[in-house]
Image (cartoon, rainbow, N blue to C red; front, top):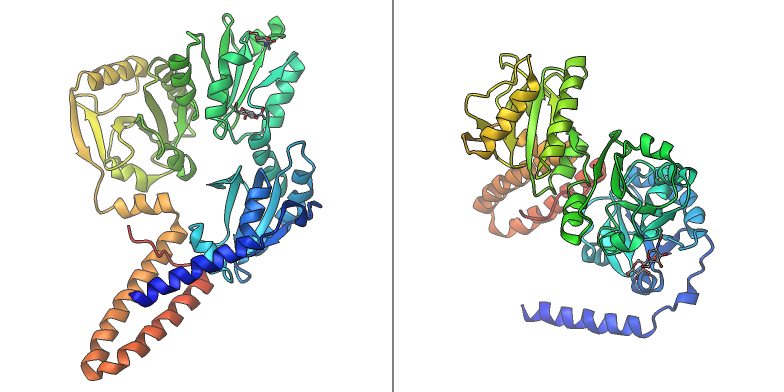
Amino acid sequence: MPRMRLHIIFLLLFCRFETGISWTADQFKVDGKVLELDESNFDSAISSFDYILVDFYAPWCSHCKHLSPQLDEAAPVLAGLKEPIVIAKVNADKFTRLASKHDVDAYPTLKLFIHGVSMEYYGPRQSDRLVQYLKKFVAPNVSILTSDSAISGFIKEAGTFFPIFIGFGLNETVLSNLAVKYKKRAWFSVTKDFSSKAMVLYDLEKVPALVVIHPNYKQQSIFYGPFEDKFLEDFIKQNFLPPVVPLNHETLKLLKDEERKIVLTITADENEDQSQNLVKLLKEAASANRDLVFGYFGLKQWEDFADKFEANEKTKLPKMIVWNGDEEYFSVIDIESLGDEDQGSRISQFLEGYRQGRTEKKTVKVPLFMGLFKSVVGIGAFFIIFIVVTMMIIMIVLMVIISKDNEPLTNDSHDKVGHAESSEAENSQYRPEKKED
Ligand SMILES: *[C@@H]1O[C@H](CO)[C@@H](O)[C@H](O)[C@H]1NC(C)=O
Ligand SMILES: *[C@@H]1O[C@H](CO)[C@@H](O)[C@H](O)[C@H]1NC(C)=O
């Protein structure tokens, strides 16, 4: 223990010494190339640049090798922006102290540092899409659009990753605080100069109005006020996701951050015409029940997931339940299925029943919880954790056997484990999960 402490003190001294001779901003050549950082210059790079994307890579990892040329391509484009974004990389396999300080437990890990504050980058990794995604972070807080073509240009430039809020007939000051607060989640703009054609195009009954477009889902919602902070903020927060979310592995991750309960509809086949009609009804229900999120998926598309909510071929579909996004869900008594006829009023009855508490609380099927876990953390990570756990069990058994035979040998077996683990990591290109949950 005392030795450990001494070690830490030494490290602290060492750090001080390092910062003492630290690099200064002009020592980084900003020429559109990816900066290679190490322990000596990492911190000063982070403090020198307002926006810097760091790739924590390992030389042997194949995903990293794919990413690297994409970053090389994106770097000059991002460096040329009015508000430049620098790309840097760190060999996390070599500079392990730096990597663990930044919670790097898989390769590659991308982190975006904005004014020194880091956030994990989960955006696209292909250079042009990566550039488009990152532009969100350096865009004006609220863009001012002065014509119909400026509006359509703005939507096109924004891409499909973030929702786009457009205030028609609104002053930017109405949105500015919230636009700063939610800068990382959405695009914000206002326009006062638009034609009646634009009103038709965006389905506006009147102005002022705040439209939110979800380009990825081809959906939009409109808010007609009141444009006061509380109401406005609720509307914005409730519209980072589209009103009706098609459920898949990606959107499930987004839903994990939701505070609202999820009204989940399971159809037989989400691509059938009947399901598309049902989605229209769900959109209507969603706009009248903004305190809930609406999601749907087809049994045919995602059978495992349907099974968690006791939906299978024998179930009368479409089935509707309210899910808390975790292990608990509710069915509404007497409304097991939406049936084929007049689904609109069945949905209303369902929601009414739910709000009145005529519900039955259920638990997501336990044996399949692993499946849910798998869908959340990704099959790869699940597989690795499985292997690591298996190896640990084998190791413990071996240690028990060895220690019975010969006490001093236990240390050797420890080393072997270390080796086995790291070669496993190499094969799978990811480090085994080290955190204990
Ligand atoms: C956005 O707003 C913040 C806080 O008011 C301000 O510091 C920042 O400069 C603004 N960003 C842009 C791009 O206008
Ligand atoms: C918003 O209002 C302020 C004054 O309150 C004004 O200076 C500004 O030009 C207005 N912005 C737009 C886009 O009309």
